Image (tube, rainbow, N blue to C red; front, side, top):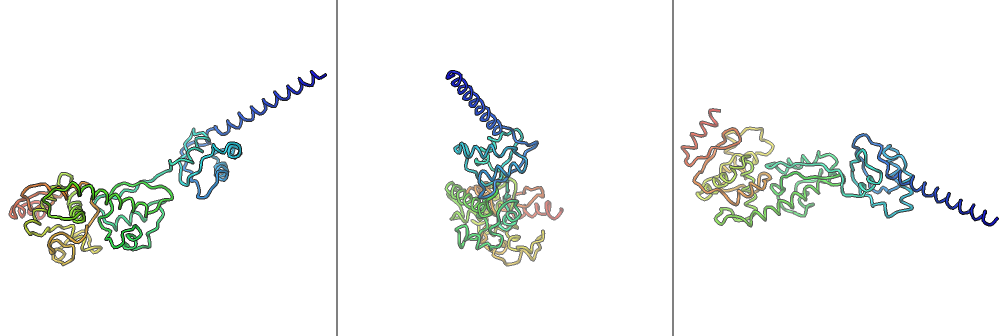
Amino acid sequence: MVKRLLAAVGMMVVLGAVVVAGGYAYWQSRLEAPLALEEPTLYQVPAGAGFNQVVVQLEERGIISDAWAFQLMARMEPERVPRLRVGEYQLMPGMSGLEMVALLGSNNVVTYPLTIPEGWTFRQMRELLSVAPKLDQLTAELSDEEVMSLLGREGTFPEGWFFPDTYRYHLGMSDVDILRQSLVRMERILEEVWEGRDDDLTIDTPYEALIMASLIERETGAPEERREIAGVFKRRMEQGMRLQTDPTVIYGMGERYDGRITRADLREATPYNTYVINGMPPTPIAMPGRASLEAAVSPLPGDTLYFVSRGDGTHHFSRTLREHNNAVNRYIRNR
């Protein structure tokens, strides 16, 4: 009788173990089951959401079918549950539930590109930031002066101080984050470039190099011309000649500029019109790239004093006024 009882108990233990093992295996299979996706799907972890709330939301959207399995994991094996990070994540077909959980606790959030072209003004940069999708807008109602104060540069005129490049941002970032990145990069790159400057420059400070670089940036998009244009500007300053560069006239005109410059515009006395003022304008007129910054501190030696646009993005350089006037007739008046 005792033997039969022990045998029955043993059988029940075995059956219980089988049931437990089977239940555990089924639970694990639900955790490792592929997501119910046929194409890449964007999922946003809401701010302040807990793990259980997220898996229920995923079940409601039909991405997973067994929220209970993940809730059980959170209770039984909490060490397997990562700390969720707010942001957008790209869920892929074939991804398992456990892979999805790991992704939602990672830094692999969806990012978006934002490109600030070389030669743009601060106003254009602000306009682009204001329409960037999913970027929090914290400066929309602020003046330029208030923006610079917010960035810790109170009293600094913003033009030229932001490095043009492609920046990436994710949900939860703001326009201030992009502005700060761009500002810090320009300050760092300007410092690096200034350290490698030539010894015989006509400019004395990094800020003057920034101004000169902005003129070069606005004058040409041809990389091979930047140092030669810098050389022309250097020699004109050395000889007491005015720089006479059209982009400064345009900048001084502000929103009045409609795509053309008249003789009256060339004669108008603005702080930026280098046909009227001596030397450089008081501030940069655009955001220069690194190549223009390097050209500003390392002008190409030579004897040219003039240049005129060929109309194809490049320029004709001249040593004498007579040669320059002939080039103007050829490339401007005839066109």
